[in-house]
Image 1: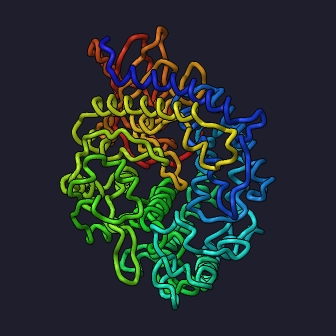
Image 2: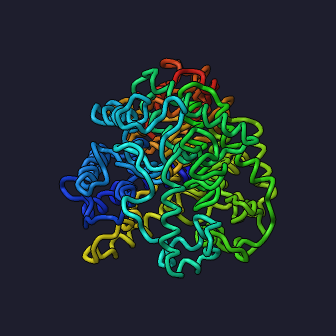
Length: 609
């Protein structure tokens, strides 16, 4: 067999990551799973940062990481949960009350554990306990069943949590990290610019206004809770979870329809869009105006649409995201991004490198009384996820148009890694479109190896004696999984603000009876079209392997026909389907096969097993 470069790089990356996570654990994970050195974040913020430290470790396990990796991930989840309980940030295992932009980030580790180990009773009980907080009859009272809304932007184990902080803070010019986002509320007398916050009393008046405006009513970013309730459905199959998802998402669909197809960002305490305290369809917390605009709204809309599609097979809720994309695309300008002010300028300068100084299409990311503003390059993950979920022709055409008009090279695999462990969706989509997936895989997996090198250097240079730093663990986490999810699972990395890790295919090792690929087996999803879908498998080991291939991360697709072709001999074998969504592939040592599948997408009830 001619061994493809991508297969060597994928297997060696998984082997390197096994050593890397152990080095991280030896330095930062105590025997009881707590992260060291410990400390307390300021105010309500920061619980998510502890849990984000190893958010993608369960994904590595589910692809083929060691059982010890799963055990360590579970130990950290338990230890950090206890750590956060003692700090008063958690109660009974869950955030006491914060926004779902951050709660969603903090839940990525937990979601990954549930997908990796769905039979774990402890995790299943926790999912039911957490999701129950949002049922209409919950003692937490987060959800208003009559108005179909969550009662506050900050919510959680203690129910709706008024305001942004327990004690009124200042909001002055000392908050330099927030200056790029501008004033949270405009129109306050005597506060017209950021520097006006320095005038006597203005910082306190801004804080008071923020406490009122962002302190009650539902906000669109709360749609991220749909992932949690969808997970409860996947693990239990109980109708109450499906009913809640359909009910809550449908309420937001009506609100978007009545707002000319564009998702509003808030619902007043009386259940009306733009009711008090915001008094406009835009301007809510993590909404259109402040601080992130579409960078917080689109993940929420996509998670809601994906949840509805998962529990019911109904793709209409994906229009929550397509409505946003269509609205901002009508406002596109062409300009040199380096010449513009933008809130995420450093991120895009790293992402585009030398292309940052050329003319690109820029999309508005926020909206205010003065109209659209904060023009930035589009975050391609959002339209890619939209197309991936629904596989609708209009969503594909949107991506094709973006690729033609965007102004940058979509075939280029850029050597960066950001906090979200994402950002290479443009190159992946281009490779799928061009039939050039092997080249893409080899290039991206080589980039991933260099990312591991960089993180290990940072980890080894980190002086833990310098004290508590709640972002330190994220900066040095050496586990990189984006290249593995795209190549092996046929999907982008999970949306960072509370997305489940969906997959086009998943694998199970028949010999060990556990999820993931056998140790020396590599996998590459070459096509995610329902006919023909194609997955290449390569056995680099000395022993035969038997791999169960599952259509869909949650067994949601039906396999109508499956054929393997040995790429050395050309021999073809028709496979028998094991249930509607699984086939078994026998892979001799040193062999390379392509599995061709004919699928019906979202044709069977989704489950995690």
